[in-house]
Length: 91
Image 1 (tube, one colour):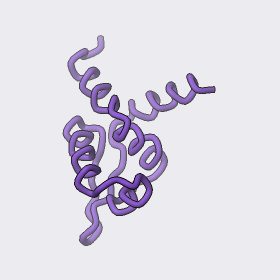
Image 2 (cartoon, helix red, strand yellow):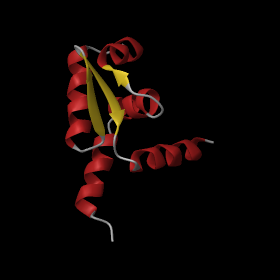
Image 3 (cartoon, one colour):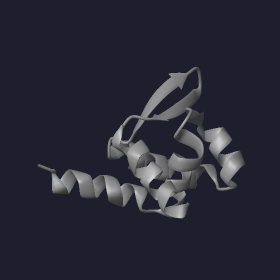
Image 4 (cartoon, one colour):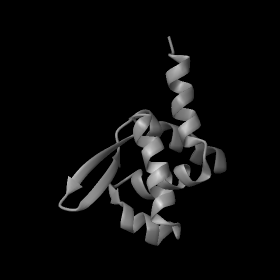
């Protein structure tokens, strides 16, 4: 049986366009650091960090420290399936 509260929190976190771009466009296949996200998305570092914090708090992302850099990757395996379902809808 689904945990509706938990599942809805994941969907809410992915429901923002910036967070969806981060997950689908930058993290689905590889990990990525904030500087690359800033360059790719053209958004301020503070904005990206805020969205990453939301994704991390929902258990969607994991952080790996590499010196002074923080590299993010998808932790929640359900996310890949959700993104693939959205992509199928496009096609």
